[in-house]
Image 1: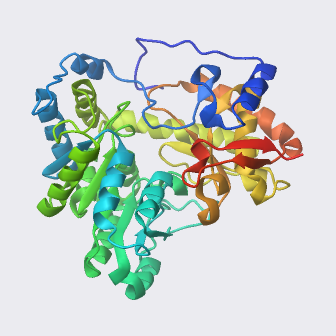
Image 2 (image 1 turned 135 degrees about the vertical axis):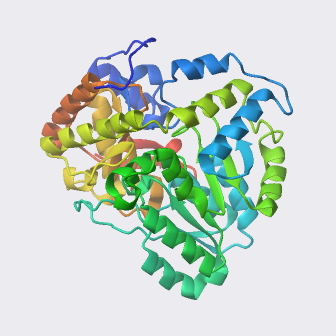
Image 3 (image 1 turned 90 degrees about the horizontal axis):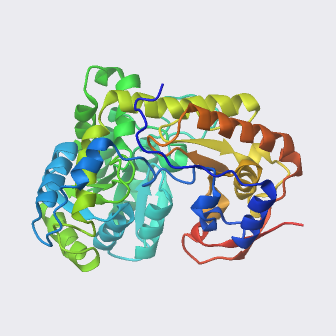
Length: 443
């Protein structure tokens, strides 16, 4: 059952199918451009879309909006230090801002490399915008295998690459959980091995910690050496060897906005703070209000509760199981924050250049107002390894009956899958095109 009870509710609209089609056409068949009040179940992202707890709402009332040195900043800083085990905390308004500051600091020349277990869209875009070439080394590309830590870095392959290119590599990035690879966790053993690899080649080791609490739950559940540890201890041990940690608190911070960079390296901290003042605001608020800092500080405590994490991961597993029974091929095993449907097997008649992931995502909205997101050729371009649709579950927002509704929509989509058409891009920017591109159906 849900690990919470409901105090505040928001009505959900269910539009007629012809109205959803009209909205899709007006939005250029881009689900990012669909107004939220025209969506029935919103699985577009789990970033900043969760429900706040009563304690978070209460702490918001204590928000200190002083420009410098606010009491809210002091509570935020202490909470982030306790969560990460790092001394230097640089606040930012969200993870993307942290990525910009970090990449501008580390990428010294165009054509250098950045390596990762798998880069997600904004991390890749920020490194590439700064001039780096991003290279992925996922431990597993097998969509069907049920390995427990498929989010791991392929240390052997990364080592082989760095032997030739270590001097030209700006950073080694570990994303935990591995979003682009199915929300799969990384193990403590692999994190330690990745840190050792970075030290060997004198490369900064960075952990994207936006879902590190969810990752910690998988470690406790599936890594024997950590079974007796608390989630808090696992998180701190995971982050211990990182030179730089950054976090979008819109995920495992359980907040609607906020984030930070954490490090013990004073040289890095000084450079990050200087750029933070330039881009984000003063170094004791970083683009956040006092209310937002209070929300994150409380959220960093609540996210470590095992009952919450058990329910969170269990919801994803339940939806994964149901959609699999319908016939969809998904990335196995179920990950931490979303289910990932394989569009290439669901729509084998839609060519890669006609964006099968976008076609499948559009069909979920058209049939039942369920909004997901394509993760494939549209999002990653030439670096895409699969054609996926991600249904990301907001935290503490939906109940089992909502998941049952999504399953019914999935059944309707599955029955019509052979009739679905692909899409062509009409207009798109050069970077992060999936956010604002427009499309037309292939005739």
